[in-house]
Length: 193
Image (cartoon, rainbow, N blue to C red; front, side):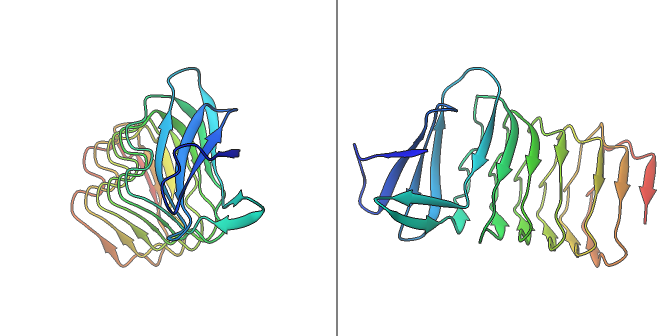
């Protein structure tokens, strides 16, 4: 990934990843990835870096803006979040997107509402340390099984709703709240606690 200084908005760096034909913007004041633009084309892998470097200075990625990748038209086989200081995936981050697998880092504490809703997501690791799944976080995805981490406390309403391929869920003992319709429309045949 390298920087392109053309059309630089104050406090925002333009990042081009030529390998994946991806352009995104990073706000170095808030240390947030704020937007994404990708071309249509063949399936590739996408890595969301834990830090970026500009003019010899390294900046951590502490947050991602809501909708950063929502509705992208390009198919990504795998989306890997490198992590670092990232603790939250915001609402709608990969909503309505064409993705196969998502790899989440340790340190993620919450996944926002509709984060992966209505995407083609078929595989995700939910790391230990995760405590909250937002409303409709995985609604309508292609997941077939999911293991919920032992640290998970709250599952938002409709979190996995209409995941018709979801047949197996491994529940931890420490869950304190499962909101309404969290698994409505799923074809669960195996529930393990």
